Image (cartoon, rainbow over all chains, first blue to last red; front, top):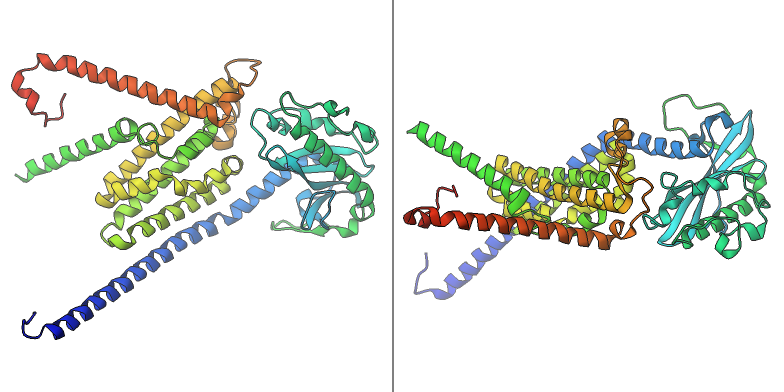
Length: 240
Length: 247
């Protein structure tokens, strides 16, 4: 209790106790915060552990579905998702890091490859494409994987919106000719969409560059020895 | 005596729950009245399936965070209240994101950025701070459910309006969320409909949102007028005391 006769001592005592109280509250609060951080991190970790395997199968299934659309199973006898070959960064694919192409094998011979291609000049940024090219250099098919094109205009590159992107199948570097590899508005062979020219223009150019890439890198792509088998599933991997 | 207090407590609980339900769905609807969470509301409401997906995800996060906040409300000091709430909300959202990735992967790809953004939806922190931190678990959970439902209902209404007017369909792509059974749920309301872009893009969402708010205000005014008309016929002294809640 305070004593009027020794105010100085009292004041120092007071400030000391205040300091003490502040200190305790800091310690208590940081301890509390830390405890909650541990709890929440634990919650997330448990969910992550429980869902991780399922997520990986989902991602793979999604990937495999897209690949199978381009190259149906009857065209090859290996597991596409597991057979990849590493590609160095290339201006033609607009890739800045190494990427991976999927390789289809038929009787030990590469029958087709699926290249990951970026069209950097979409209306709303980059468009990620998968371009399937057969051994003879003709297109097996093209699919848009991810893009941010305007719904209702540029999203006609999706197969569930329009059939436009299917029109690539069967085309090759010289069929149509170099002048034909652009949208009709620019004098080429490919339809543009009503109200959207930029998106198809970007896709057509990217597919054309991918064909050029295939021609210059044919040797590497068609050599079955460049395939790395990845398998995260427990099933026995297919023999090479 | 105990019986009496028990029934009183029971009626007050039901009254409280009824009030919570009315607040969440109508009187204090997070989307129509509080205008919270507009970014996901306008961004994701371009079709019914997107709206339903984000609506459910948001509702689960609100409920989960309300329950958790209510459980720890006596342990948390005022100083660290908000950071703790944010941590809880962020971890619930991350869990929901992981679960969506695992079980509704295609929808997860469509909703994309809006799932992590649930963390920043002011409805959730708002309910945690304004309601859950002051109430016991059951009302807090119910409040989360009702606020989430209020948000989801508006999201669904907007989604339905925009899908119908923008693309001429309803319930397209529901299989992304509900699995193969929903694959043929698509109702083509206007066959050969040429897309109405304005409804699909964000400006359309603003306009439709405006319509919804206007409709709510009209209904509110009608109800108020009806109440006013009824009032003068009542005896004079009862007008003063309206504690019973019966109008």
